[in-house]
Every structure is written in C-alpha cells, then in structure tokens.
Image (cartoon, rainbow, N blue to C red):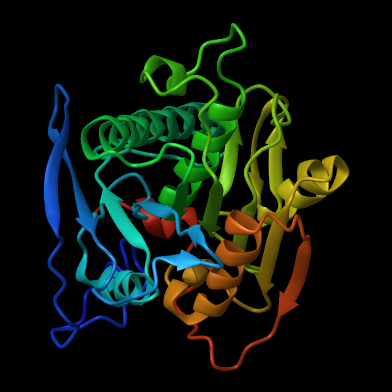
Length: 322
C-alpha cells in the first residue's frame, strides 16, 4: 500500500510502497526533552567503501528536516530512505531530526480576516522548528564530535522553511539581537556550510529578510505553480512569505550571495517530494559550492518530462479538517 505522506508532504501521493528498501540508522539518539515530547535523531553513516572526501576535502554532514505542513510527518518516513541511501552511497553522513509540529491541532484559516493571525502562527511554528534543529546540531557537535564548520542544513516544504530560517537566524546571531542559535549554545559565529531547500520560503513579520553576515551557499528547488509554498512572495505590510524566486530576486542576486536556483516549469508543490529525481543538481551544488567554494550563481528554468508530477496542493487542502 502506498504512503500518502509523500516524504512527509501532506496530500501528495508518494511513490514509496511496501517494496521500498528498509534503511536502519547507524544510531538513534535522544537529543532533547520538551514539555510535550522527546525529540530524537537518526544518524545514517556513509556506505562502507564509499568516498567520503572530494578532492581531498571532507564531505559535510547533512542534517535533514522533514516536510509536514507543521502538522504531521516523520523523520523516518520510509519514503525518504532511497534518497538517504543515495547520499550514503556517495559518501555523505545524513542525520534526520525530529522537531515539534507547531501547527498540529490548530484550525488554520486563510481568509482576509485571519491572514495576520495565520502568519503569526506559521512564523511561530517555524521558530519552534528552528529551535529544535539547533538543539539537534548542538547535540551532534557536543556529543558526536561533528565538525560545526562542516554541516549542511536541508529540508522539504515545512522542513525547507525551517532550514532557510535557521541559516537566517544564525547569520544574524551574536550581534546583540535575540537569536535562537545563540540561545541554543551553538559556537559563536556558527552558521551552516550550505542550505538545500526543496519548495521552501522565508516567513517574516518584520519586512524583507536581511543577513548581517553573508549566508551559506543556497540550493533552491521549486515548482513554478506551487500553490502551497509560493515560489514568489506575498506581503501584508511587514508580514510576508518569500519563496525561492523572491529570495533570489530581492535578496541573493542584489547582494551577490551564492545560490543555485532551479525552477521546475509546470510543477506545483510536488517538488517538495522529488528530491531523488534531482540528485545531480544536489551533488553538483555540494561539490562546487559547499566544498570547493567556487561562488557560482546558477539560475535555471527546467522543463523535464521525466520529473514526476504530483497533486496540486494549496493551503486549504493541507489544513482542511480531517
């Protein structure tokens, strides 16, 4: 029977089924106690015999936050396993982390009378996820000896929003303003070595996001017709959501930040579930930008008949009452 989570993305039909290969983590660790739950992470070590360096450079640890709409999803959804396995076979360590689902049980409304409340609730859910991701990173550094200067953050859908927000917070930390990275006790000056976002966006309540320090290289993958996490932007005063194309146009390109942006023509939120089908782009990004630091900017519109097309989601479908 096929999973209906599509790698944790609500409502998108997954390709995983009972024949999906099982994948057992090398280790499962409790990394945080919260009032509502305990949080765990799974560590998947590189496949024995795989190449763990590239041109003499140690490959980074990849920390992954699953997609969920902030209402469901699992770090160990079997749909992710083939994707994890690809990375392990290429010599990468993958760490899949829990985070609290900040919108679970909340009746979300998106009419004009509730937009500001919905923005505040979503931003709160993102911040909760960032707090938990930073706790996981702190655990990996302190307890597992992971190099804090060689960690890449990645996520899909809600996990992508958390990933982008975590790097933004880290880049603005240690400058006197409140910071989740600083509160988590991460090493001063910490930020990720790279960020990979699959159908993600930055949510803000304070206007256009700005970075106090140059952010890590960013890989942005998005569908041009995404009705759940928009590829462009929508603003209401200082409240707003900035999708991949808006981040590139309004922030990254004008500032000369490094990014690889792939917009998939005709695709919707299914690009939050198609990571396995664009591995070449991911490996290129990791090798050229994260490890070799070439500083290349790639902005490509992709038409790919081989890319699976999933259900067209909007926020109403994701948050409809069950």
